[in-house]
Image (cartoon, rainbow, N blue to C red; front, side):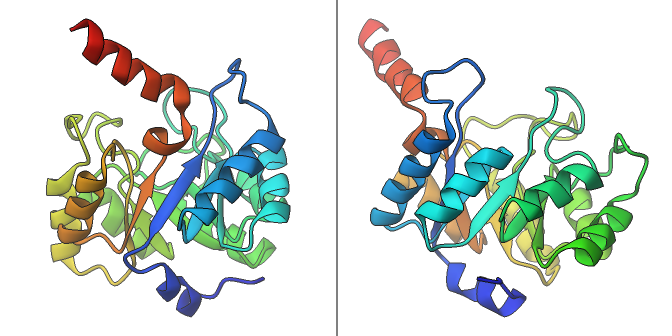
Length: 228
């Protein structure tokens, strides 16, 4: 399945579930990721977001919805699909949409964001999602040719303060700017009510990860509440 820009319309007002596990965790296994993704689709997820080449490959075989793929390399600075090499590997692994760092920070390979997007276009049929941290990032990502922009990095780049829940103010700012690209709310969406707020703030679709697919964190929330 090749996802065209027109095909993105099927994601409008829908839930995208991020299926990821951190290094060293029991669930850090491509087969487990694929099972989580398949379970999320049964629950109504219109797309899934997956990290790692093997995880993308297994998930593609397990679901029939669009797969947003990324490759985290490192922990600081630009580490979400940080280079063109990473992006093309994600596309070749089967991702319909390649999620890349969409901020204005220098990239490890020295390419600009526009050059990276152009390289993805030339080397694959995947669409590009720019993970942004500010309105200025989102505007620059659209100028660079990104097909979608997300608020994934809001609160993590030093430009904006980290909000307790989703950065609704940033969503409203980007929506009001009329950038002409689907706006994906991502980051700290922990409840159904917050997901609804994100849509009301102008999001095209909403990504939820930790609150659905990370049992260690969810368990910690309950444990903390009982011990407070």
